[in-house]
Length: 270
Length: 263
Ligand SMILES: Nc1ncnc2c1ncn2[C@@H]1O[C@H](COP(=O)(O)OP(=O)(O)O)[C@@H](O)[C@H]1O
Ligand SMILES: [Mg+2]
Image 1 (cartoon, rainbow over the protein chains, first blue to last red):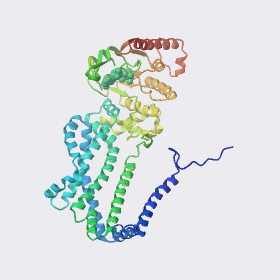
Image 2 (spheres, rainbow over the protein chains, first blue to last red):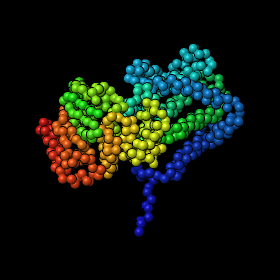
Image 3 (spheres, chains in turn green, brown):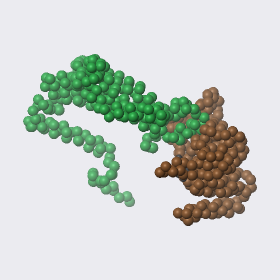
Image 4 (spheres, rainbow over the protein chains, first blue to last red):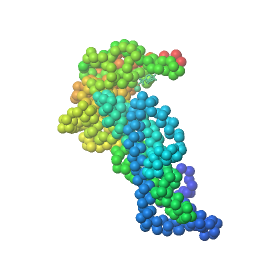
């Protein structure tokens, strides 16, 4: 005879919980957040002008999404991310890989990169505005500067983690320096390059909003600053929601790409 | 084929700016079609010796020659199988085995044929198009062995190739390696610290002592009657096996004893 399973208390140390309970708990936290927010507004604890109700934000968002202007702002923001991130990657990925492969190149570039990395990218905004005027130039440049140095170092570190036995195996099979770089180091580090890009894309969104708030007439950030002038708090919050959703979407796309591009990775081994 | 180590020494930079003498005055030869096992307690310099033969490290003194040519770097005449798994995880089993051939531009059809032959030799035909992630540890080592053999080296170097495997898989792999040595006629220089493994596999055992590592004994297991046995239990029950195992254990213990006294 088997004993019936005893119900464990919800807060058992380290014990796994059912997937359904996990989802329910996650949703509950959000519901609580919206409930408190709604209550604060309904009870008059906050002025609706400064904090509109969640329903108001939602309806504004829906209304905005049906105007072409809003889509143009979204398009402008996404385009800036794409262009600047592509530029940064085209430089950072190959450079990071060769820096991680050859000590001399690391010794040459790294002290230079390290200094730039610790300069906050937004401190370049005034000078970027002077150099590039008010067009797309300064925004792309800010996003580029904010991402490229970190991406180089991430890729370099991942490259250094390529297992030495892989490289030595290729050497004993007759691999030349160039062949080892092409047929061992690059394919071995590629999955982590995609991880590094995913991490840096999130940073890219941060600089985008800064660039658009400080120096732009279009894009989601600029839209939010316009809304501020007319005290349209609901539009500002709709903008925040859109930025959040877009960031999440990018992250998801990278995760899916990672799974599709590298089906050979043994997830259980991590 | 003749591999010759003449008075090899190797010192490494040690802690606090000093040097550590890993091995001293090591000389031995490995000849055609021989399965030679380097045996010794861990830390006695077995890997160091094998890596120098592979050309991955340089001796501090002495010379290593293969058929008279001085070894001064890695080359495909000396194939290496490491203890750690080295199957390239982004390549299928077949692509792994074809890897060395691809490096030197062997035509696709010949590559495929050679790879198929060696994949069959290590019993992995069913897995030819699988990625290493679905393979067990023993299968991954078989991929590494097939990949090295497909490249047709003069000598196969193996550094504790079965050290990470469970006991049963280990003796299967030992038997498979003997079968491969018989079938291909390859010269094999293998490193182990497992006495039983060394006696079963070896045509000749080079026993190393420690600190610094040096050749303490050159043992031919004569009780095997000059032949290789395909089943391990057949060797274990031969008269003479137990004596040799005991003698080698005594050698190991003398080592350990010398250490404790020194300490
Ligand atoms: N790269 C290295 N740097 C410093 N010391 C090393 C290095 N490689 C090996 N040694 C030292 O040389 C000795 C022999 O090492 P190793 O050849 O790995 O022994 P084994 O393979 O027999 O266990 C050890 O004392 C080890 O600490
Ligand atoms: Mg070792």
